[in-house]
Every structure is written in C-alpha cells, then in structure tokens.
Image (cartoon, rainbow, N blue to C red):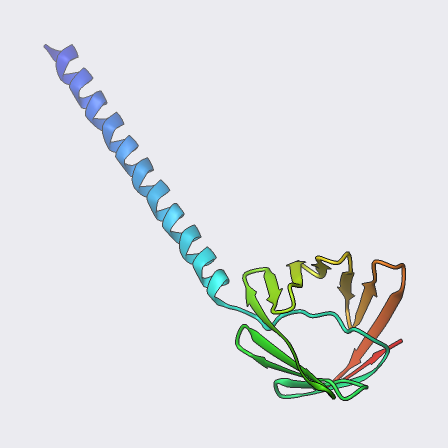
Length: 149
C-alpha cells in the first residue's frame, strides 16, 4: 500500500512539474511574440540610397538634393520630387521598402539591397553605395549635411 501511495505522489509531482514547464514555455513564447510585434510596428523611414554626387541637406522630415530633388518622410511613407515634378513614392514594411516605380529595397542591419543590383552599406557616418555598373558613391554625413562623391 505504501508503494501505491508513493507512486501516486510521484506521478502527481511529475505532472505538476510538466504543467509548470508548459506554463513557463507559454510565458516565454508570449514575451517573444510581444517583442517581435513591437519591432514590426516600429517603422522607420525608408532607407533609400543617395543617387548621385553632391550635397544633401536634411531639415526635419525633408531632404533636399543637389539637383533640386526633395524627399519627404512621413511614418513609413516617403515621397520624392525632382525639378520636373513628382517622383516615386516609397512604402516601408518591416525590412522592405517598395517604390511606386517598381523598385524594392531590402535592408538587413547596415546593408540595403536594391532589386537592380545596387548595394548600400553604412559604416559610422559614411554610406558606400555600389552600383550594378561598378560605380561607387561614398556619402559622409555631418549633422544635417550629407556630402556624396
């Protein structure tokens, strides 16, 4: 009789441990899901590489380019305008940015890949953009000014 009571006690104890492990697993899963959902909703403006050499100036949510271009960021949307009129609009979802012109930018860490083969890498205050034709643009940012060569 003592063995049956002991076995019943051990089984109950093991079941209790299993239930606690399941509860701990569910809590850990919930914490991970919450952290991922917060990351997904915290959208940054699109990371669109600088297109040409010159000086770019940024004030608040607008960037002015060397040839009269204007880029305006609002939430996950970026609109562009060149001297001839409006340009493409970009929308960012997670680590991807989609342009109304069919362009797609994918960002992982400090590197952005464009669907035309352009690769852009940021190191400190410098951004290196490698074009598909082998042409490289190096941009250095100092406060509100970005100088590209």
